Amino acid sequence: MVLFSGSANEALARAVADRLGTTLAARVLERFPDGELRVEVNASVRGQRVYVVQPTQPPAESHVFELLLLGDACRRAGAARLTAVVPYFGYARQDRRATGRGPIAARVAADVIATAGFDAVMVVDLHSRATEGFFSVPLEHLSAVTLLAEAIRSRAHEGSVLVAPDLGAAKLADRYSRILDIPVATVHKRRVSGGEVTVRQLVGDVAGKTPLIVDDMLSTGGTVVAAARALLDAGATPDITVVVTHGLFSPPASQALRDLPITKFLTTDSVPQAHTGLPVQVVSIAPLLAEVIRRHAHDESLGDLLSHE
Image (cartoon, rainbow, N blue to C red; front, side):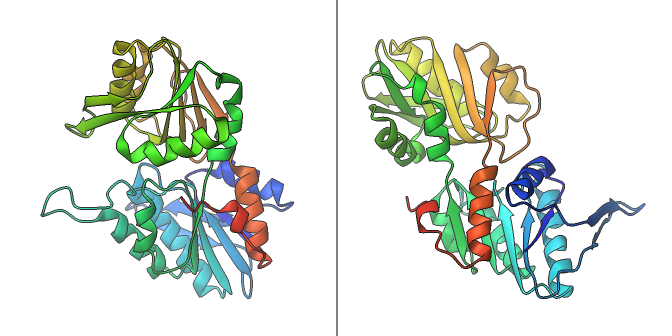
C-alpha cells in the first residue's frame, strides 16, 4: 500500500504509518503566487492501493479541496484503488435543510469526494448515520466510542450518570452506557444560533451524581455550556467530564467553557489539538485507523471494527 497525508493532520497520519511499519509517501503541497494550490505526488502509485489521510476540519473548504487534488493526482498516476481516510468529516452537521432554501452541504461534500476518483471513504463517528446514504462509494464508518469509554472507565462509578447533551446524542450515550453500565440522562435543547443554545428539559435523575457528558463533537461549546448549566441547576455534582470524538474547540469555546466546573475534556486526535488552556486529554485513534487500513488493504473483514449504530 501507499499512504499519503494532506496538511490537515500530518501527526496522525505519521502515527498511522508508524503502526503500519511504513512511512508517508512524498508529495508536494504548496501555493502558487496567486494563492492557487499546487499538488504533486512524488512516489510511484501505479497498480497500488493508495490511502490519503485528511480530516476536513476548519478551514474545511481548503482541506476538502486538498484531499480532492491529492486523490485526482493519485488516480491519474495509475493508483489501482484509492481510499480517502477522513477521520473528521466536515459539513456532516449540515445533513438536511434547516430552512426551505438552503443546500445539503454534507451531500455536496460526499459527491465531490467521489468525483475525485476515490473508491472508498473511511470516517470516524459521523454526526448522523444518515450521512452514509449521501455517498455513492462504499463508506467504512468507524467509531472511537470503545477507546474513549475505556479511557474514562475510572470515572464511571455508581454515582456517575452519562448525559446526552441533545436528542441527537441519545443513541451515542446509550452505547457508552452499555460499555460502562451506568444510567443515562438526556437534555432537550433548542439551538438559537450557531453558538447559542437553550435547554427546554432535562430527563433523568442527576441530583448528587457526577455527570459524564458525551457527544460526537465539540465546536463552539454552546451545547456543552447549556447542558452543564442545566445539570448544575438540577443538583448534579460540580465535577463534570466531557467526552467527544472530535474536539474542534473553535475560538469561542475556551472562554465559554473556562468558568464551568469541567475537570476533564476527553477527545481524540482526529483533528490537531491546539493549546486552549482547558484540561484536555487526548486518546489516539491511530491504532484503530492502522488496523482498518491493514485489513482493508488485504481484503480482510472489517466487521468487528465498524460502527453499526
